[in-house]
Length: 160
Image (tube, rainbow, N blue to C red; front, side, top):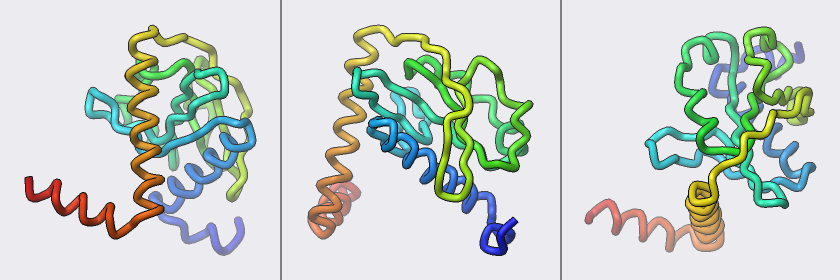
């Protein structure tokens, strides 16, 4: 293992795998957003919008303990057309369910090892989730373009 990766913490691994998975999404012409909150209160690590309008959920796992302690990921199937796990090279892949897609990160790059089976969303849920996706992405872009305006808005909302 390269020395820069030897001292990685769990949050470091999660962030690295997430970045690598987002890079893969970009190469696939999928538009990813991270940390999208669902109406249920759960948070998807990555939701990617495909060119055909399909929605792909990617659950990032930093290691076996992260996967084994998580019982909520099956709920994510209800909010996407396809569900993937993104892990690093050291993750014991035999733990992951065969009926999900698999993305493996190596440093800041990732490859799709196994495509996810499709389970299409209902039209109303797709519309609602696509709107949530677009609003989050547009809000983040606006905040990048005007950080002080975004900070003022957050402060005003916190007071309300």
